[in-house]
Image 1 (cartoon, rainbow, N blue to C red):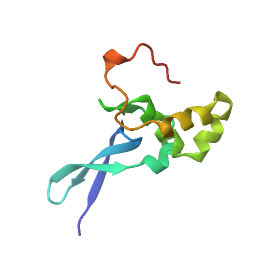
Image 2 (image 1 turned 135 degrees about the vertical axis):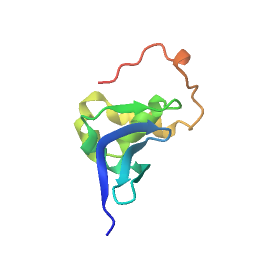
Image 3 (image 1 turned 180 degrees about the vertical axis):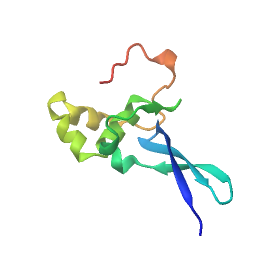
Image 4 (image 1 turned 60 degrees about the vertical axis):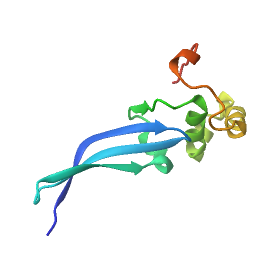
Length: 111
């Protein structure tokens, strides 16, 4: 019988296009072999509200709004913060048309 154990260590990272990727270590104790496994957990963003999420190097604010757009719960929660206007803007933006990089950001506050 094959026994797999999942480590409690996990890493969440937001990537281009609003994809939320969870990286977990999976270890087979019988074979003493393990590997990192990437899982797309974008559709379960509501379950990761209080988890630390790293931003990939190519992430833009458009990607953050694309991630919010995946969750009707988050859209409803943020209604009073003009989320519809931000989501419309993010949907109309063309991926890759926005300059990325820390030098192009004057100020970014997310909370």
